[in-house]
Every structure is written in structure tokens, then in C-alpha cells.
Length: 189
Length: 286
Ligand SMILES: C[S@@+](CC[C@H](N)C(=O)[O-])C[C@H]1O[C@@H](n2cnc3c(N)ncnc32)[C@H](O)[C@@H]1O
Image: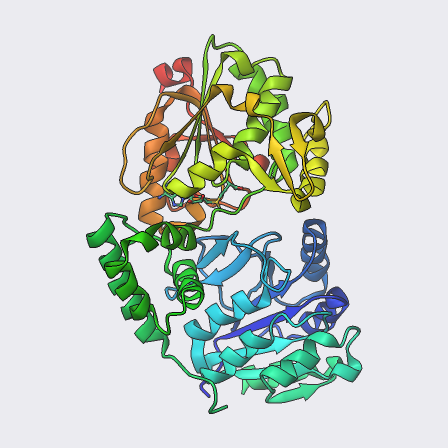
């Protein structure tokens, strides 16, 4: 794989705490664009944005439609919309029906970024209670990207990482506390 | 993972372009300026649904089976909507915009991209409750015939009714949503009296011109599917259709920055994505 240009992270139930652990542990020197899709209600995303701003060494923003994807910035998917990335590295939103009962859906994000960044992408699946993200992670691997999955035994909700492992497999399957150090290592190498 | 077909994304892009050309030449619908990421995703879903292995397979069917057109349009436009989606926006319309509209003897409202009509009925109910409906006219447009047909019927799944009813309350509704519809076992039907000041019409924001002289235009979650130049075209059309001091309401996460035409609007209530053209007086000073 080439040096990663982006990291895409998906999670659902238990995701707020997991994201705090992962994003709070990322190195301030990272130059990758980081895209996060969490299934949740709109007030949770606002709250999460505030919380993450305090604990992350990298800037945290909600992804804005038509704006450019920024390197070294954490972008959260806005509630109620699917988040996609165009090949010219600008964000696009969609209000198409839910996928796997979710909008934003991790699969929708992962399919779109897999094609944009190919082998320069790391896909991460954390805790969650459904199978969203599994097919998307498979797509990321098919196109040469790296897959990181939180060990199901370590996850607050096991279904999502379990499904990801079954459908996509993983290049790394590690406990939550190891994910930020792993990403730092892969990205700063 | 040899069992999974790896289709090269570049190939898809070529096939996408060819499909768009075919649809345009064969049927006159122009999707060339839609934002590619969503369009590609919808085309793949549609190809799947119609049992085509590739987008090219879909192109062939679009060329040779004209009766497929309504399906294809529905697949490409995905008319999903809700009643009183984002209730705070409808509350703001009711509390902040309607009082200003009330000064006009006749109120023209253009709802562009009306999907299956959920927002049309939402608006009609709010206008009715504000005592303005009998001097209002709602023009509800969409590019899809089938969507308009559905919109004029006003029949929806009862599954959605509970959420819509909560939305209606949160939007400041003063009755109960049930007062405006009859419910069956699986379906609800909106009271057809609500349609008395609604005109449904075909209008394509990508190719058609000014539609009416409007005091309020509602176009939510339609422009998100457009590329920047097409978004700009649509916003220019809205500007040219609005009276001075007229209002434009967009979807909650829409970004106007790339658009030149958007500069003619000023934020009225930004949090609800409601914008306004300068009034006569402001215009004169400018
Ligand atoms: C996602 S729906 C939005 C429905 C509603 N406004 C809402 O926010 O709930 C988008 C609608 O825009 C319509 N549309 C897409 N392209 C259009 C165009 N070029 N001209 C007119 N309508 C269009 C589609 O047919 C669809 O019904």
C-alpha cells in the first residue's frame, strides 16, 4: 500500500466512548484526512463534536457539503445524511433512504472513499450493534486499502466488528486501546 | 477474495458517462451535471434492481425499453421525504416567515422537488392553521411524473404516521395530524381538501426556466444532488422567480458558498437555512 492519505472510521452502539479513545490518541502530526461515521441522533453528533474538540490533538469539524476534504482534520458525518466524497476530494451529502437502518451509513461512506483513495486508505470498524460497514470494509480491501477492526471480545457491542471480520476480514484486529497507536504507526511510517 | 467480482471504478465512470448521454439523447433528461458520487451509487442500485450486471446493461435497456423510463427516473431521483422533516424549520416558517407573508393579498409558494408531496401537505396544514391558506397558492413541481402522481394522491404508509405526528407537534401544530387524514389498516390518506390550493406540475430545475412569481420557495434536499454549476443555475432561477423580499428555504445541511447567484440572498434565519432577497427599499439603496 502507499502512504495513507485518509482514515475512515465507522461505529454505532458504544461508539462515542470508542471514538474518544481512538481520536483522543491520534498524533498531532498526522496529515491524513479523517472521516467519521457514527450512527446517532443529531444532538449526539453536536455533543461529540464538542467533546472531541477538547480531547483531540487534531481539529474536529462536521463535514460540510461541497467543501474540500482537509488533511490533518477530523470530519464527522452530519446527522440524517449519508456522507460521500467526490473524486475531486470534496464532500457530498445524500438523503437517500437508510442503509442497514442507518443514515449516515458506514457502507455508503466506505464505498465512496474506497474508490477515491484506493490503497491510500485505512478503514476502521469499531463497536456497534449491526452489520453496517462490513460490505464497505470489504470494498476498501478489494481496492487495496487496509482494514482495522476492533476485537469483538473487546467491543461494547460485538455485532459490527464481528460482521466486518466475517464479510471483509481484517489486516489488523486489535483491542480499542491499541487502535490509536496502530494508526499513528501506519500513518507516520 | 477471488469469488467477488472486482469492478474497476474507472470503468464505472466511463459507463456512467455513456448512460447519462444515452438517457439524454433518448429521453431528453439531463443528468450530466448531477454530483457523481450519489449518481453512481443510485445507478448501481438501479442496475441491481433491474437485474443488469453492469451500468452498460442498464444503458441498453434504457435505449430499447422506453417503458422503463419511469422506473429509471425514480431510481435516479429517489423521491424520499417526510412530513414536517426538521420540525424546527417548519416552526420557524410559521413563526417568522408567515407573519411577513401575511401582508400580501395573495401568497404564491413554489415547492421545487416535491417528491411524494409530504412537504406540500405539511405546508398546506401550517398555512391553514395560520389562517392564510385561502389566499395562498402552492405550486408543487418535480421532474418525475410518477412522483407528482403520488404527490397528488397523498397516500402514505401508516408506518410513518407516528413519526410525522411527532414532527407535526414539534413544528408547533395546533391540532392533531390525525385531523388531517383518514387512516386505514396500512395506509393513511391526507384530506383532499388540503389540495384545494395546490397545483402540481412538471418542472426540471436542470433545463426549465422561471416557473412563477413566488413569495416563498421551498427547495429542500434537492440541490445536494447537483454539481456546483447546476446548484448555481437553480439558485439563479429561484432568485429570478422571487419577488423582492421573497424567501428561500433550503435543506438543513446545504452549503451555498460555491454559488455566485447565492450572493444575492441574505441569511434570514441561517439555522433553518432560510434566505431572503433584498426588499424594495434595500434594493433601492444598493
Ligand atoms: C430527496 S427528495 C426531497 C424531498 C423533500 N423536499 C424533502 O426534503 O423531504 C428530492 C426530489 O427532487 C426531485 N428532483 C431531482 N432532480 C430534480 C430536477 N432537476 N428538477 C426538479 N426536481 C428534481 C426528485 O425527483 C425528488 O423528488
